[in-house]
Image (cartoon, rainbow, N blue to C red; front, side, top):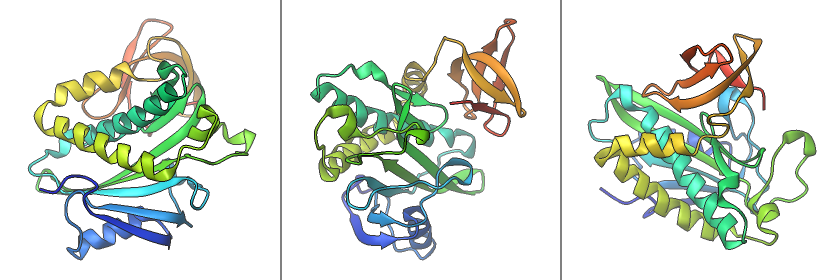
Length: 252
C-alpha cells in the first residue's frame, strides 16, 4: 500500500478536489494515498454545505484518497480524528517555529482547526460504505497558509498571519502528508490512542462554551468525543449527553 503523498496530482484549477478524487475512485484511477492538489478551487465545500474559500496559489486546497482494508463503518469517525490531528500537528509546528504557544492551536469539533478563536483550517470527509465497511474515503483539507487581509467577519486567520512571515504551500504539504501517514497508521494499529489525542486537543474542553441545541441557545462544556463522532458535553445542571452535529453546534 502506497504512503500518503507518494502520488500527487497537481491541478491548476478544479471545481472541488473532493469531487475530482471521488470521480477518480469511481473510475478506478486512484491508488490509496493519492493526493489531489489544486492551485485554485472554484467550488470548495466545507461542513454543512458551506463554501470554502482559498486564495489561488497562497493556500492549501487538497484531497487525499484512502482505500481502507476492513475498517468497520462504525469506526469511520476515526478518519476524521486522524485528519484533524495531522492538520493540528502542522499548525502546532508552524506556531512553534515562530516562537508562539503551540497550545493556541486546537481542534474545534468536529473538523476545524483554530488558532485562538480564529479558524485556520477545515476538513471535509466523504466516505463510501460497502457491506459494513469503509470502501473508500476522500479527505478534503483546506488550510489558510499565506493568505492576508482575511475578512474580519469570517473569524479566520492564516499560518502567515500567525507566524509573521510567509510559510509556503509546499512545506506545509510535505509535513501534512507525513503527519497524515503517521496518524493513518494509528487508525489501523492503535485506535484508542487516536481518540485520546483528539480529546486532548479539543477546543473548549472542560470549560463552558455557547452552543445551539436543536436551534436553541445551550451552554455546556465539552468532555470528549465518542466512537460515533458525537460530542459528549456536560451542561450547567451536571447532565452529561452525547450529541451529533445535526443537533449540536458551536456558536463560534
